[in-house]
Image (cartoon, rainbow, N blue to C red; front, top):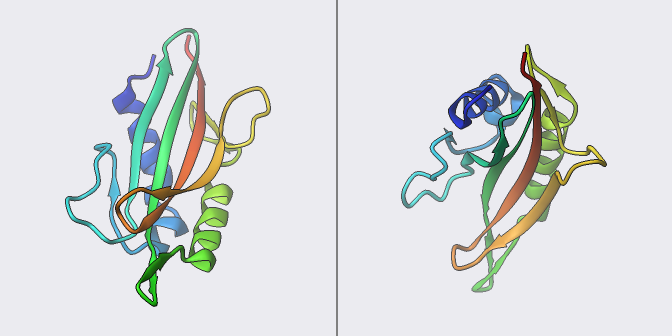
Length: 138
């Protein structure tokens, strides 16, 4: 059985050696909380659910924060930047096989996927990667 901490460690290792981490301007955090007052493109890992049975299934959020552009005093999403980071995330997280786990963003039998969400009151958008994490425990 893997704990939430173990699962975060696995995701952190996948992200830490990726081109996605090199591309973003912020930090990679597995504490479920962003650095206070950050306006950088931070990546935050958090566990949504962890069903610790023989076939262990967990859902993991990997959120990437992208500051909006100020256009004539109005906040607007950075569409091109979001598109690039979405594609990099998709390429990184879909159908990954670790030493003892599997990640997916597109398994039709589970509620996983990717969305871009406006973050209320923060002048930024969030790329929400809801990742399916699976492992068979012996």
